[in-house]
Length: 295
Image (cartoon, rainbow, N blue to C red; front, side, top):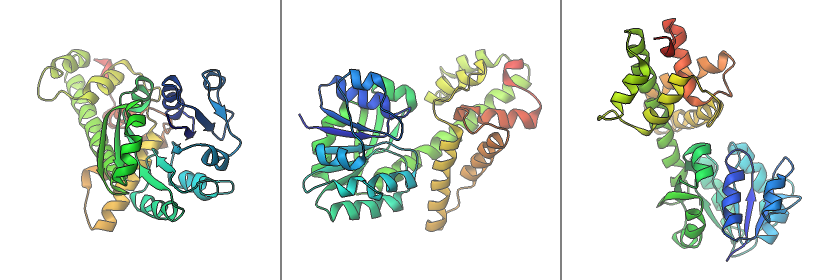
C-alpha cells in the first residue's frame, strides 16, 4: 500500500484525505492552516512543508483553490518540486487552468516524476460521501497506479487523455453546471411568479425529461432558501473565467456562459461571493422583484 501525501485540507481536501486514512494508507498532511485534530487522530502525519510531504510520500495529491496556489505548492519555497524524486507521482486535484497544467506537468516530468491532473465534481457532499466524479489527464501508467486511490475518493473515475485534458473536462463540466443552475433558477422563478408553488413544480419536474441532479439538489436549495456554501460563487466564477479565457484563446464564442458569469458577478456585488452557487437565483430574483419561495 503506497504512502500518500495530501496538500490542501479545506472543505474538499479534509474529507478526501480522511477516506485515504480510513482505507489504511499512511498519509502525510500539509496545509496553510494547522492540520485538523480529527485527521491526526485518524493516523495522519502532519508535515511542516510541501517539500517534506514530497520527500516522504510515494504520491502527492494537491487540492487547493486556484492556479497560483498550485504553482506555489509545486514550485515555491520548500515546494513539492524541491522534494520530489524519480518514480513518484504528483496529482493535482484542484480545478485550474488547462494551459498552466501542461506547463506544470512538463516541469515535474523533467524531475523524473509523473504528473496527473485529476479535478473533481460533486462538491463537499461528494467529497464527504466518497462519490466524486474524477476526470484524469496524464500518463496511462501513472493513472493505473493511482486508480485504486481515486476509487477510495470517488465513484466515477475516467482517464480522459493527456495532461491538461482532465482540467479541460472540468471546465466543460462547470459550463454545464452553471447553465443548468441558470435554467433551474429561471424555471422556478417563472413558475413562482405565475402563482404556482415552486416546491411542487420542482417535484413534478423531477419525474420528467427536465430532471437533473441540479434540479434535485440546487432546486431544493432555492425553494428552501439554503445558500450555505457547498461550492462557493467565487469558485464558480473562477471556473467560468477559465472557460471564457480558454474560449478567447480558441476563437470561440460562449454567450450563455458569459451571461451566467454576469449573474454570478451580480451576486458577488451584493455580498454573495461566499454563497453557494445555487444562489445565482438571487440575481434573477432581484431583477424580477420576486423570490421564488414567496408563492
